[in-house]
Image 1: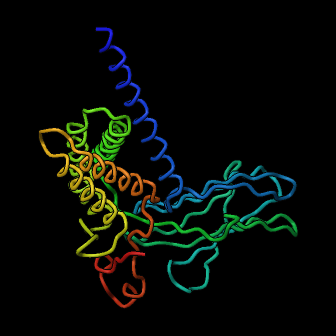
Image 2: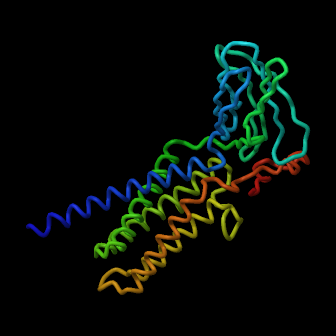
Image 3: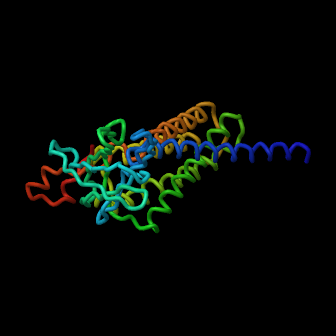
Length: 289
């Protein structure tokens, strides 16, 4: 009994670390992705103005772009154009509503993107938001919660079990096999079964990775599942784990971490406006970029 207790606490500690690492990685991936709101602070008319501008919206909804600006002489314009195009920017005067200046961007088909910037003015002073240059907002189809939530849940659980497997390997413990196979099952359900359903609702195509395309999100999911599957193949279903099997399984974990550290939706689906302008169906004119 005296030996079992510390071992049990080590296992609990490793689960705790796996959850913390998953949460940290998920936050990093989300905050560095191209759909995370553009944030910053500018100074205009002796006032510090913090902004948070959205970079993702649902098709059928006009994207409301608002900046909290105290009442005073500050006015604004929302300048936008379709992306990626070389069209001239269209300017929309922003309306004051309480302490906010706002304007709306017109809705676009799924995978349609608009490039925009906000110009604030006070007397002879001008500030452009975001400060790093024009931002890009992407539209997507409405994904039902019954599809999106299980996808996110299974992907996060798959990562937790994957990290737990890596920690088991790193600490020389022996309950690797069961954890590795559970992680693989969760990755398959979340990434290869629920993922295409999310993609279909959002952009009209279930799979745009290899061999049908080069969508980064689909391809990195496929790479992770294949790498983890190879690791599980070496681990097997029974018998003593060899040093080689442990090494391959740990390598699969490294691949998983690299995949999750790539910002979400990077180089995602993009509508080809040139084809749409020539009369093509928007759902048939989606590429990657």
